[in-house]
Length: 152
Image (cartoon, rainbow, N blue to C red; front, side, top):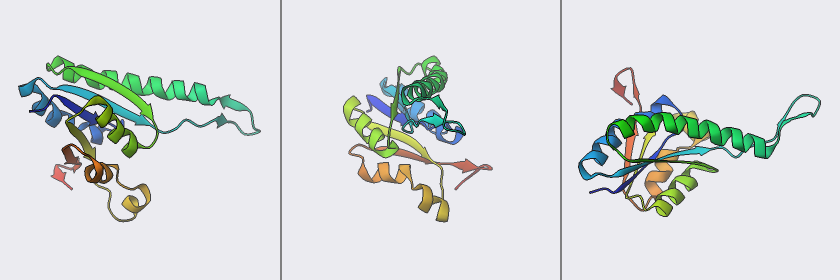
């Protein structure tokens, strides 16, 4: 049924809870997994007194390498289970980049977990998962975070 499953990961254990579900959907049909990590736009790192510690290109390279290392680690588990895996690291707004990557890669399912923020936390941070769910042109597997064995 699925050929390309885009799995959006933010580097947290909570976001990784979607991996077993995506793997179970990928295996029967031989679907490939595309692991996507969206980094924030790099910023100049400046010490007190105005001394530049890291320029934008250096910070971008650092963040990209950190994302690649993270995704390579996550990819091993899927690869060992028999799911072909591609990894992608990009920069910018997570919602926009997830939707753009889904279109560019021909993904026919987007899988991600929600941090289940409520109240003020959701108002301040917004909800990437909700925005993707509302705007995606393909089905979205949305897994709500479990805390203490209870889905919230």
